[in-house]
Amino acid sequence: MDFLVLTLFPELFGPFWKTGIVGRAQENGIINGRTIDIRDFAAGRHKVVDDRPFGGGCGMVMKPEPLDRALTEAKARLPQAGVILLSPQGSPFNHKTAACLAKAANRGLILVCGRYEGIDQRVIERHVELEISIGDYILTGGELASMVVIDAVTRLLPGALGNQDSASDESFSQGTLEYAQYTRPRDWEGQEVPDVLLSGNHQRIADWRKGQALMTTLLKRPDLLRTRGLDEQEEKLLERWRLEIERILDGQRIRSLDPPPGGG
Ligand code: 9D3
Image 1: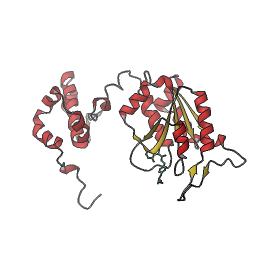
Image 2 (image 1 turned 180 degrees about the vertical axis):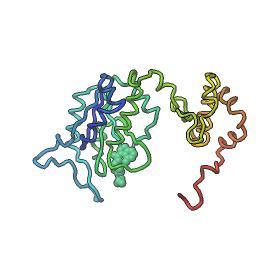
Image 3 (image 1 turned 60 degrees about the vertical axis):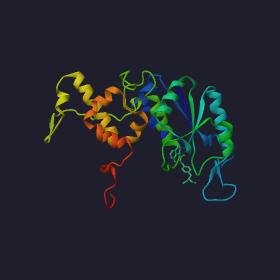
Image 4 (image 1 turned 120 degrees about the vertical axis):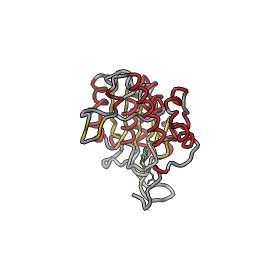
């Protein structure tokens, strides 16, 4: 899958393209990640890429011309690619979006990273197909957000993970959080690993993990289960806590999750 990132800070991507699962995918030819420096498309000796906003206000806006030329070059290199703008105004990024983008991997992606207070709206209207935000907090630019998107999409591509199955049976495709994990030593400073994990009974282990994942989700992210619901097997696994679960799913407060008195 081709990723072409348009940015004013291409140096941020050096180690990113070379490290970990993204790095290995790049080496194996599963992805081809490149950056384009928007400043290379700026005019004049000073290579100006920003200007003051019409209507006044503080901060600067990315000028349309350099970005438009950079995008024209990007589209010439990847004519089939979708164009995504990373922006605080975008749709929230989640597993479903990542899976969707991974499915259309053959098209490739052009990712536009804004800096300053934003980019001229007319470039967005001319080129951008999808605006993505990675959450409700303020970043200083789209670069980290584009790495988040590329990272999440890459690990869903066939062959990117060591074990082929590991992406499909993990938590967000199931709509839950993950079960707790343990490794050696069996007794760590008096804290023991749950017995069932040492039992060698694969069915019991699988059931324990499902129940553990469901309880964790219920306690930490009840919103995930409320939209998803429980199937018959899951209801059986959680029978013991049925009353508490119904109370939580009815939207009542979980006191342990409320902020402690006095904050902190
Ligand atoms: C405080 C400045 N904001 C009001 C004028 C506008 C603003 C512009 C540009 C705020 C942040 C940014 C830079 N952020 C991104 O480009 C960005 C982002 C983010 O800030 N949060 C979550 N997801 C994303 S994706 C791109």
